[in-house]
Length: 249
Image (cartoon, rainbow, N blue to C red; front, side, top):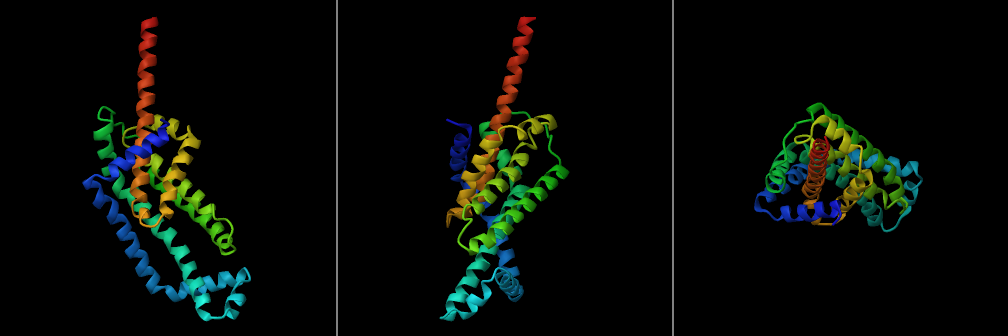
């Protein structure tokens, strides 16, 4: 079985553990509450920005002439939803990356990789830089996607955004405790396509109603399994090479 699908299978099995339920729920509750408050307080300001954006692409006048009026209101509400759902998911993923990953890594390592040595090659600065880069590119992709979505095109772009964010956000964190700095660089610079595939498969869950509640934890678990399995393999290969070299001497 390819390593990506093995990681997904193991992540799904981990999700049904009772201890995972609260870890899975509280980040999205916090993120949803935060953006609900922001949305209620700044609703009028956001509405003005949306109207200005629609005017810039020549849609505002058409909406103003639309009859009945509830159609324009519904479209505006839908655009609010398109803006806030990615922000909620992004915030949930950030909370998961910073506050939930250590617990998930510990859970996966103890159960599936008990002999994998901790090298602590990741740093807080590295984590912050990686997260900032992931967020910036993700928001740029969504900024490009929103105008295209208004015209009914570019439906694939949100999936690209989710794939990028998941693989960029979780790969470093998954390795930061067990791998040393050299191993982190080696693993992050290799197998980019399988990582993107895993990011896409886990990112698609973000757009499925109800399942999107578990999407951040599911993505985190999948990348922990994937990267720790790769780390375990390169260490085993290294030991085998050293043993073979000693025998040949």
